[in-house]
Amino acid sequence: MAEVKITATTRTEFGKGASRRTRVAGQVPAVVYGHGSTPRHITLPAHELMLALKNSNVLLDLQIGSESQLALPKAVIRHAIKGNLEHLDLVVVNRGEKVTVDVAVHTTGEHERDGILEHVNNTIQVEADAAKIPTELMLDITGLAAGTSATAGDVVLPAGVTLVSPADLVVVHVSHRPTAEEPTVVEAIEATEAAPAAPVEAS
Image (cartoon, rainbow, N blue to C red; front, side, top):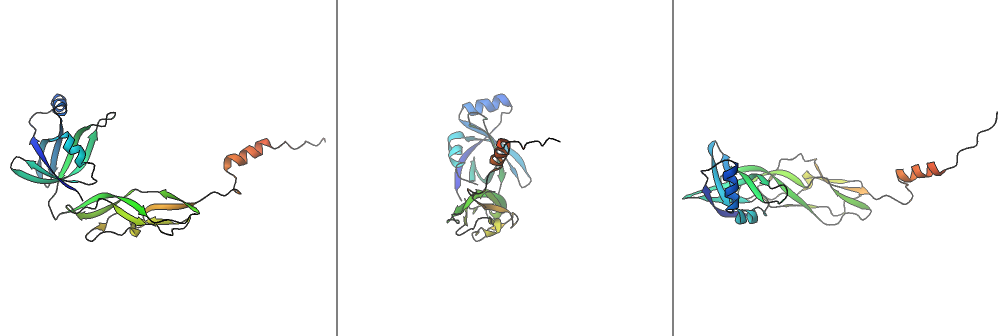
């Protein structure tokens, strides 16, 4: 996983006005909490933080004055339209500590060509060392037949990483391709509506 060292500054002003001034100055308001410690309000450089957050489950090595603190992003708030970083919640972690996180799953290999691959869950939940969280996990779907699925239990996990999600959680499913002989519901309805009405026999 990625580990990024970033300089943080203790925040002493609060409220919407103070947060707005912080963002105008190129900083992002953030709060660090966890392990029973008092929440710490800090600011982080927006550009460096934006680059760091491009890495999934990035571990931030916060340099707060003479202190160093490891933390994982817990909640990232962005501007609804512009997408700019507006606030960040960080949870304190220690090196060697086990944490539970969601990790993206990507597929490798080719499923059987008579099926259509559907991604049901793009992530699975695992437990890993806070400093060794995998950035992604791979799922081999070679030969997966139409009508079958691959589950979280089929994902090969790195050493030291354990599955938290249910083993039977479906990650991908290969559905059958529709055949020309199978009319769709719409086609069947249209055919029924187009058929001439049966003549009514006189009594």
